[in-house]
Length: 409
Image 1 (cartoon, rainbow, N blue to C red):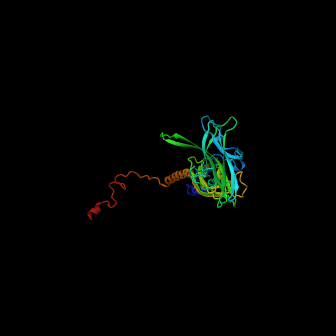
Image 2: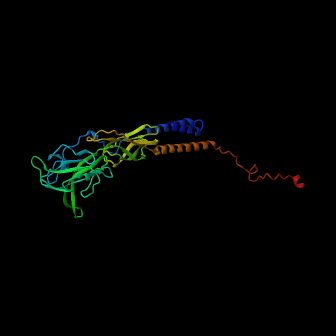
Image 3: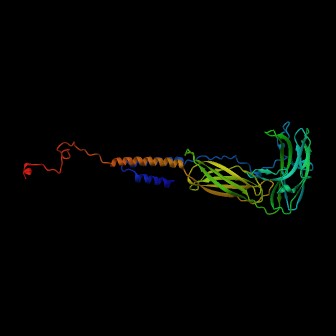
């Protein structure tokens, strides 16, 4: 920036008018430098994403069955849940979690609870648990073929239909559903996801008065870790940055940073994120922390977009993204490394440059007009031309005066 300022100063001094114009041009350069300095004032950075979530490895799992039973029962509304059980009673586990070898077998129980005042007929089945295209948690449907650990769970039948009694004065209605997990001999090492799903199906009508089936589902997560080499790894892919110029140059512009976090390892992970922008000379000007990634299964990915405000355009800038993998409480510690990525982008200060360019143009035009006016010679004074005077209307320099001697000859 200082080099650019000195270049402007030299161009004004060399092309300015001599003498009295030099102090005026020096004052103009000083004003320009002050304006550029005001444009470089830092502004606070904000982000459009939600506040960071807590570290999943430091939070204890929620005890008891999961599902709509987490809230108080509403009169006239079905409220039920499903969760781990031991010896016919609910236990404090928040979800099912196992570490097994290939070919291993484990028997367990799930408790289906009814918090309502009327009995419920529910369907219970096992499904795969993973991430959808946007990174959210996805659970397989009742008739959907399983491809992961959902197919390792065996219930008394593929779909178990149970009648859960209404709650009593002292406890909710309860039915225990036994199941078995069998790890295939060709199961790859690492983490796998499944879910035990309880569904209440009712008939209703849509906006066109057509009969439709409404499914209310609650799930309990099932995590299975197969013994073998573990490779926790997150990668940042498709990093893109775009700069948006602000009309007010003092506030600076904004930058939109988007990227994809891809779990390329075999361990389910959460993640903390950090996004920063550095200026032309490597100075870190803006730092934000997007919301934590709650859960990424192996092979899953999630697209992240964050916007940073108050970014001063310094021509060549860089965006840096750091993703720190996080383990869950039920996972043993594993050495892990951060995922980092950087991308350069152009941030041209069009508004300040336009103002400076217009000021230079008008200043140069005014100097040119003043200089041209000084160089033009003043008009000469010519006396009136009368008869007989040189240049008069009856004066002919080619004719000599006629005298009598000339005529006689």
